[in-house]
Image (cartoon, rainbow, N blue to C red; front, side, top):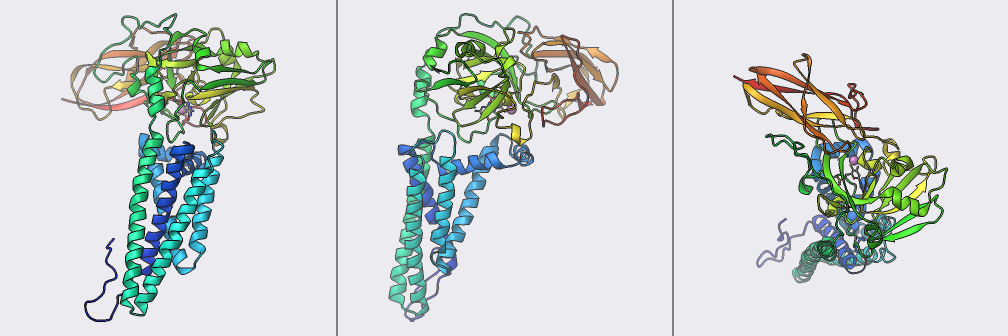
Length: 529
Ligand SMILES: Nc1nc2c(c(=O)[nH]1)N[C@H]1C(S)=C(S)[C@@H](COP(=O)(O)O)O[C@H]1N2
Ligand SMILES: [Mo]
């Protein structure tokens, strides 16, 4: 954008008229920038969750229909959240430009539009779960500041334009300078204050320190990864997924900051005595380790939204027992600090032979922030969306016919056991393979009963049984491998698993909605001569 659209032409009295609407659009954007910056600043000071951009973004996350959400994930992958926020930013800038032009042409319509925008942002903020009593303050102060900037800037602009029209170089010049200085300084100031406050607001400084300082009691029982559980084969996934490589799926635009010292877990609903536990209460019940493979319902056949970790935690059944579950309950609605909910069959949480836990550590360290610090649920055999609530803070014991979870009205089943699956990790489709002896290898899982065998068929030939790595337990995936003498040319590799109850992996293909994908993976590989 060129700043110099209006110039005094040397000695003559002609004064060039500015493109009023372009500068009005700029004033609108400046006013929105001020609105957001002031809101972010006060959010950082008094109400951390009261960020307009994030609240509006989260609101959009909650209302977009499932196909659109899937498209966004396909297009942007793990950067879908950044793409969404960028979209909100561009949308807000366009709306603000329109408000600026409206103020210029039809005063005070622009100010009213900014006011409506501010009111919508305030509504998005105060209706979010976890909004504090002061959550309305930042967006309201921001809106007032934004309206002030718009009204002031556009009035200078109008005087500038009017004076230019009358060839009054002096008045035009004075108002031009005032307009440019005011909008320029407020915009730069807003960007600095807004970005600074957002960074301050997002940094987990205090909670990060709390996590670093956390000393968990050592686990009474540990999980040992047996010899032969993990083959190191090029391209094959390790049996324990390092925390940094563990897939992340959630609806949270920013990772919730939960301080373990103020964290509480309440057990409510159809219980004899509602209870509330602190973090110390929970870990004081005694910690044990559990090896569990977690899977996302959105994992396509052959996909990577699955990982295996050693979790340290406390059985959920022990906590439920303290509260006393009533006989006609059949579901537990778990809730995260950010309002996300999951519906888990009560029986999956109370089963003595299935260790559903409140996890506080992952692979020997306190839960990473994006995996639910300080406490999350891990339930063997159920997809994450119906069981693995991160940043969990409340369980409501209830019934499936009374309550529903976040994803239920959005096209996913209320109950969703993980479907048995197997996948080829190596060779990869498209990777160059030289003819001769190679190893075909991959992963397979069949929670909660365990994998009995994995078979591979090459070019639709006979199913050949592969070798399995030593399982950690039935809740964890296994590796499989098969030696293959590869001939030059194109080949299909198909894989299927069988569980310890003799069930064969489902061959029929199903999409991820409503309750998880199925089908045998069949990949095409090309072997060079
Ligand atoms: N609070 C919260 N917990 C959540 C979710 C969420 O959106 N919010 N997503 C669930 C889903 S869909 C999955 S697959 C798992 C993923 O856990 P991870 O990110 O630690 O791999 O978390 C579950 N827990
Ligand atoms: Mo998921």
